[in-house]
Length: 324
Image (cartoon, rainbow, N blue to C red; front, side):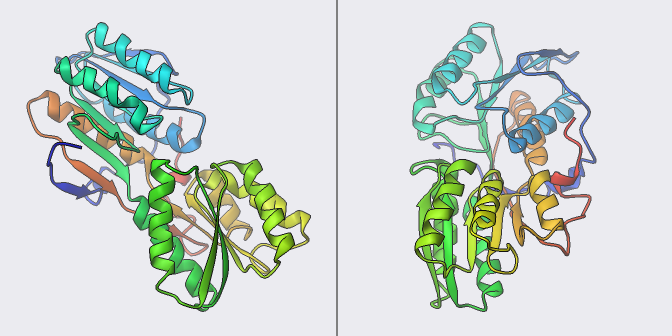
């Protein structure tokens, strides 16, 4: 990023107290507004995951209160070429601002640069781009999230044991930072060792890797997955191996999805690390309105929240809020 806006946290954003989100437009639909800030496009890399649906829900709720002329929401269905085309189409249609979650950072640089050339401000949500000028960004503290998981696991293991870390693909924004935070923090506990495997954020790969690793060496006391979507694969693997989660192996996730909260409640998962995609989507929309009104954007970092049986029913957790 080339701008030098002050780095903020979402402590202030928490004051939004989003109690829930009304249903908004489906992918590809537009909402007509009565404002004078022009048309704004929200281009998501996918809407297939609950976390991204949470970002969409927050965007829709807050956009409805902002003076945009029209808001358009599109999913690229995890295809960078599609997302580049969506950028081009929205610029050609006269969009005054673009908020987007990059599919692959490096592949979206030309799209951001095209918006720069057109004088259209761009704000990223959930991730960043490798180059180009951004008016602002709203991202989860992935490093902090990994560190929170490491601290929980180390304490649960009494600072000694073996951990399997199942990551996202190498080079992926979230995976690299979550791994960095986890490994750096777990390294402060010399008695804890880690085996790291790339599971590509896939439940199926998480299942097969867990079976393979624990079959070769059953002396693992904990498993950390980079996204809650892999939890069901890990739990299926433990069932195949005749191991009881929470007793034989501690399982920890990251994202704070509704499904993960239910797994924490029933004891299958010891903890998950929650972000707040609803607040992220809302903040990105509000930041775009501020920029279009002549203000400056900023780099907002969403803090990580550890979720255990002690706070799993907290109504402020995004996983306990309706998404539409």
